[in-house]
Length: 286
Image 1 (cartoon, helix red, strand yellow):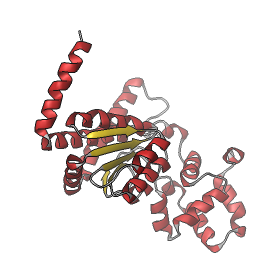
Image 2 (image 1 turned 30 degrees about the vertical axis):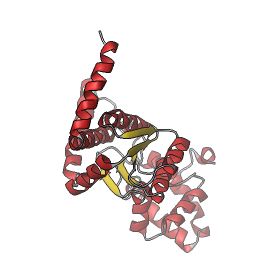
Image 3 (image 1 turned 120 degrees about the vertical axis):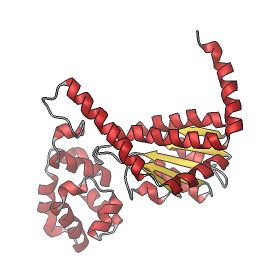
């Protein structure tokens, strides 16, 4: 159905169907019509709080418009209210030279790093390190672009001696979460905080008694509801866009920080493992 409404103005469609809406649906419609540019930066939870309308009502309204859900609606709305080039990068212009483009990309990444460093809650970070260093097993979940971050986390934490895995497939994430329990941990990584597979996996892991940790760029996203601990990142890249740029590097940096801290807690084992690894892979190098 989304293909059918592609090319049609969402704003025009909402206005056309307005008279047939229920009172609660009209509240959703009013908020969209009055704040179209603001909405593309809001999670469904933030939309709900700002409009005082239940998340379920917002979701049903998006379905009535012909979308699979809120995220699909938001991306389509962004195509109407945001300049197309901003889908590539927020700061670039059509006539920018390659050198200028590179500078803007690098500057955006540096600013994201600095901003996130200011945002980090030291107490929460300490608690997460404590949980991870004591865990008998850690499973990392990430889909799409975040799957590379989950795999990097696995690659790092493998050195600590902790039994760990990385899962990018939605079914594997669910299966892994179902097998976790007390004393173990699940780490869900999602730029938008709205990936259904990762959210459901954390929910299942939490229900089974495992500690759940979320790394996301979006405050009050659905993912945060299933996490015992949340690490937030920030960047100027748009939240309606599903592909992360600067925030991806910040997520990797958070993983690095957690790995270093956990390695320090498990120093003797980590150092011993590093020596074994170096000896083992030495035959792979000239």
